[in-house]
Image (cartoon, rainbow, N blue to C red; front, side, top):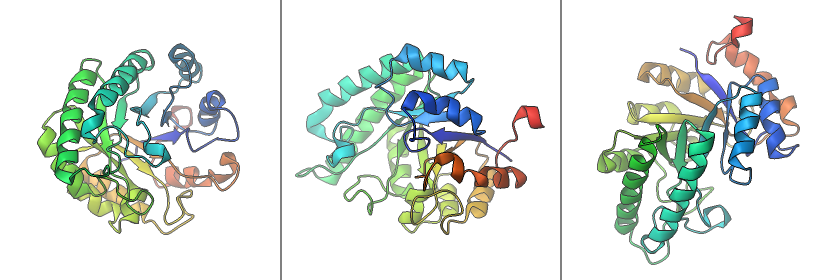
Length: 271
């Protein structure tokens, strides 16, 4: 099996402003894009840019409050229920215009003074609300496990923790976002994580370990991971979310290697 390849425009092609990265990704051979937090671009402008380059928008994140600056974020903090609701409404309005295939919700860090059980309860409640809201738009919801080395105190960091949340939320519109890099940083081989989450994976991201660089810059066993994805019947995106060592365009030799291995699809014009 081979998969469609997306570029994470929050980390790749950063040598130019965000709007120009869409055409750059298309020109580099990616099949689509994802953007962590695209809200700085007016939705009608982003829609036009995506259409001009014939690039699907695979995924965006729900606004996460102060999570990216070291705070606990919104999704798992009981006292921030109203802020989460405001973020959800903003994302719904935006997604209705730009039509991402999925919206990812970041669980965030365990807030000071909050018991883990209370944080998980809050996350479950918020995911249930979000799943129903985005289901009405035909947009899937994912949530992500992030390693606790890069983000100490992150609430959800393993596939087992994701599986427990999925079972509690019990909503058909929820799936796991699986990032090979974060799993490997938790000393969990991505192939093992895939087997633990089989049937519940909605979106896959990757970077090599330990440096979060391009494939081939570290020691991650991509071949084993892709065999496990194939065995699991995964049919979603593979999204490149790594930090380029220099100009992104100089780090893309791995794409042709992956095509030669039939891990990613060859563009239709070359088939």
